[in-house]
Length: 304
Ligand code: ADP
Ligand code: FRU
Image 1 (cartoon, helix red, strand yellow):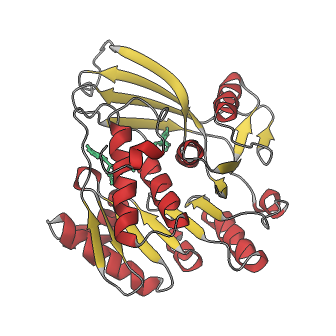
Image 2 (cartoon, protein in one colour):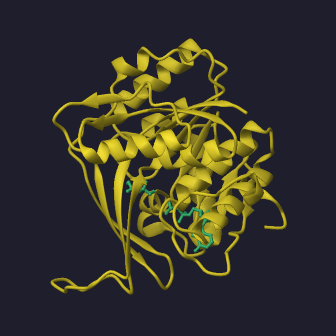
């Protein structure tokens, strides 16, 4: 069991299960609705906690009822919210999600006006008892300061950073992490019109480019139903296929679950190929179920 701190967001997710993404100006009826906590880092922590780790979350919340729902959910998974900054009079970030009942695809409209977690609050956290620090690549200036501070205070502490969306100066986080986890969306955006059509060639080209930028790190990119690619410290490309369940039900947070699986495997000392496989196995189990509840070490077994 490891002590893990995650920095990033929590949201309220309003998930409408629909037959298809509606046409503009249409009115459609959802077949079902879930209202649940979401947000990349807290999703990852909820999975890590079910894998047996002691998790803490550093992020912001408001003082509204949605924030209370988020806190209750995190408490249910034993996630320590001691470091949370509560902003009076603000609103919890909210995502309005259409989940396609036929293929589990998710389309997200996200709204937030809540300030991000600040560097001053982060500096007050005692990092000495941590085994891992994971950060979402957002509010780049503050996260840069946080990673620099962590590096200075605890040079041996492994640092992972998720880079999901192109944001101004986000590449400056790369040089500060040991493990960089990119989304396919980010990779394709970076490759632009030159992107090779095969996933393997595209992921390979992107990861090699990132390695030049940050040779100290392991670089990984999840690629949806094509699994995931990674580049070893020696520059070898590794791949794991996806583990597709009998029915894909809910892909919301598949990437966040993948990140949890990868961190868990790296903490266990697994090599990159095995780590990618474990992470894809866990994410494959997730896409076959609604939400994250019930994911466990069993989801990592070869027979699942
Ligand atoms: P995100 O949720 O950030 O869009 P991805 O779509 O890349 O992330 O998915 C992350 C991981 O989840 C993939 O590497 C894969 O292992 C798993 N996954 C995603 N979609 C599917 C799918 N349709 N079938 C099986 N596994 C999937
Ligand atoms: C899934 C997710 C949702 C949230 C949105 C925020 O990866 O974290 O739970 O609404 O992304 O961008």
